[in-house]
Amino acid sequence: MSSPSFTPAAQILWDAIPHQFQEQVVHNISCPHCSDMTTITDVTGEVHGKSLVLFGRCIRCHGKVARVLEGPPENVVLQPGDRVIWWKRIPGGDYVYPIQATVLTLTEKRVKIEADDDGKSMIRYVPPQSLQLQG
Image 1 (cartoon, one colour):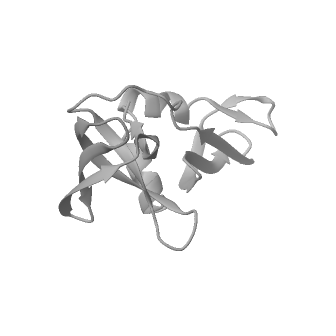
Image 2 (tube, helix red, strand yellow):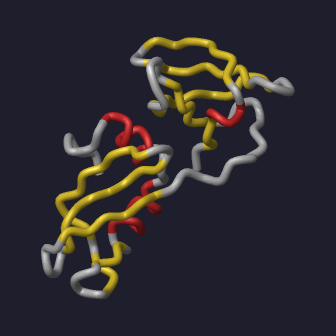
Image 3 (spheres, one colour):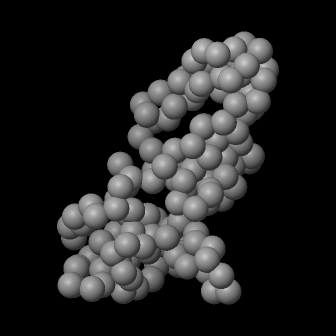
C-alpha cells in the first residue's frame, strides 16, 4: 500500500513492514462503531513519536477507525549489517525523522551507520537508542 496520503516518514515505516504483516494490519482493525474487527479503507498514515498511526474508514459501516503500530521494544542487540531505522533528530525541538540505514560497527556508546538521507549516502555515529531494528 503506497499512497500519497502517507506522510514521507510514515511511508518509510510502512515500507519497513513485511508485506504479509501489512496485510494482517489492514484486515485486522477494531471498529468502535461495529464493535467488531474490520478492514480499513481510505488509509492515511502519520508518524507520532516513534509510532506509525493509520487512519481510515471501516469497510462495513464507513465509520472512522485508527490503528497505532508501536515501534519495537528498545534494548535490541544490533549487529553489523543489520538494517535499521535511524530516528534522526531535527534541530530546534524534539522532532525526529525516520531514515533507513545499515549498521557498520558498534562501540560501547555509539553505533556507526551508513544512511541514505534524501538520496545522499552518509556515515554517522549515533547513540544506539536512536536506532530501531527493521523487521
